[in-house]
Amino acid sequence: MQINDKVENFTLQNQDGKEVSLTDFKGKPVVLFFYPRADTPGCTIESCGFRDAFEKFQKQGIVVLGISRDTVKDQKKFKDKYDLPYDLLADPDMELINRYDLVKPKNMYGKLVKGVKRTTYLIGPDQRLIHIFEEVKPEGHAEEVLTLLKAHAKK
Figure 1 (spheres, rainbow, N blue to C red):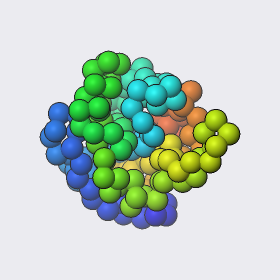
Figure 2: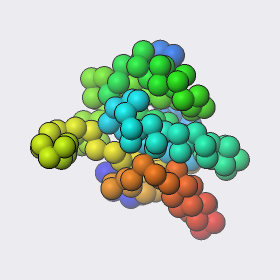
Figure 3: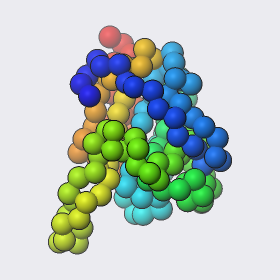
Figure 4: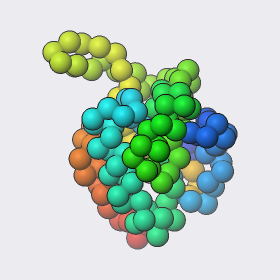
């Protein structure tokens, strides 16, 4: 997927088992942030960063969606535990994760394992890809995304 490409629609269940599709948000910018596993340290920092900046995203009309390979039940537990105000989408079969080619070798405590690479996609109101953050550091990421989207809106 390249910048300015039309992003293919997808449908996944949110933490409540309700189906959510990308096309539900036509006309609004969308932040899709993929994280490896609910309720792990880095994923909690990143998710809470989006929570803490959520009001700023809302004021800009930006939709925030978190996606991981966790089950609907695990997403619900994670959302409730940290009072996350946006939908968490469950991709336990890794259909979307594989479509976006996000399973990569990672170094985990000195051991090479395959896992979901923390990646964020910014999608414009026309459902075209604006930006991909590939080397995401959980701390401060939400503000980094907001800054880029604000700059893009001024163009």
